[in-house]
Amino acid sequence: MLNYSIIENSLNIKLECLSKQSLEYKDLISNTLKEQKTTQVDKKQAIAKLHALLENQNLECIHGGKVILKSNKGKTFKDDGVPIMLESDLLNSSIVA
Image (cartoon, rainbow, N blue to C red; front, side, top):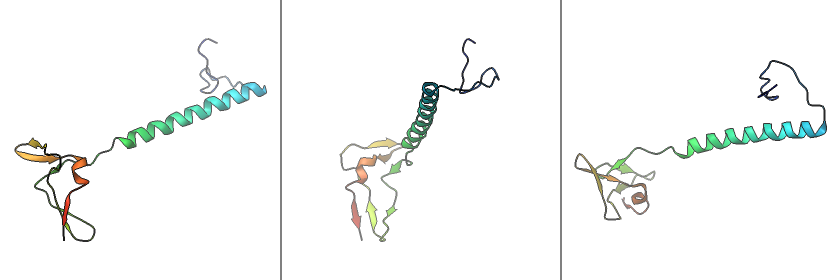
């Protein structure tokens, strides 16, 4: 019975938990596994990012205004000579109506 798991029925033997303590332990393990799966899904969703923004791109607001993309921090990163914006640079960008 070494490495047997009641939850996964690893030996294809149906064992039932009859004691109150065993049932509580089984529920605790089951709930812990569900929480871990939920946490893993949340972590995967948290690392989703938008594509890189370039300073020469045109963005339009919902109300129709145009956003002037210029780095507010004074530091620009370049890719093939085109400056790339950081997400924090969008926070205070100017909007031209």
